[in-house]
Image (cartoon, rainbow, N blue to C red; front, side, top):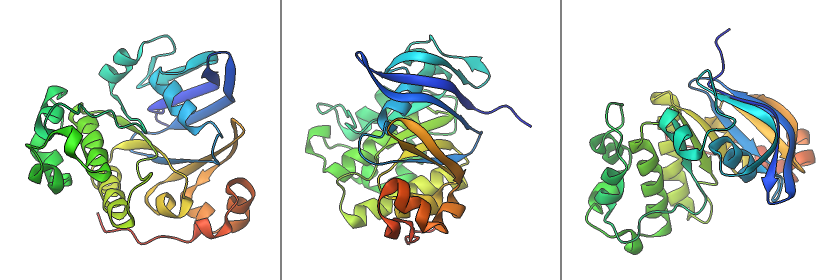
Length: 246
């Protein structure tokens, strides 16, 4: 069996002196899309921040692409191929869309400016617009496009649909589906709403109070409303949503 692309072994981490996740072990394979679910405060954001080196690690070890990264700073992890789109998006507000994309570009990989524009046509339409003038949905597209310009091997997406209008959210779901299915990019996707993300992911991990309480196939959870109700609180959350084809 091939080595996992990302491996977290017994991770306990948090911020300051407070622990937010406890002894979590998790693996993500090359080309696999993993949904990371849980109630508010379950530790989802802390877990992917730990993978990126942006949270305080108390215990445990991490590997990426066969290399231990436990003590590597965030920029070294990014250079190895870890991409991160945080909730805050963090676009450069004083730069245009195109400047945001080209400022961070790492050549030599499959993702170029042209391919990002093909994935997000709206960004090409707004390529001369300043980041400060973009809508929330456009900023999310730009944050994802900018992460792709770094040509990552694994993309960490933290609540990519949060606060977006339903039509915009559906468009972004379609783009995520194309990245993971058509392009074969590995991803960990933090999301509150299971019914939106399970149909386009391979496996699902559920956190409760900082601990991993469920790990299995996304399709199986779609058929198990009792599990979703127990850990997520809403049984209806596992009704498959309509996602645009990739």
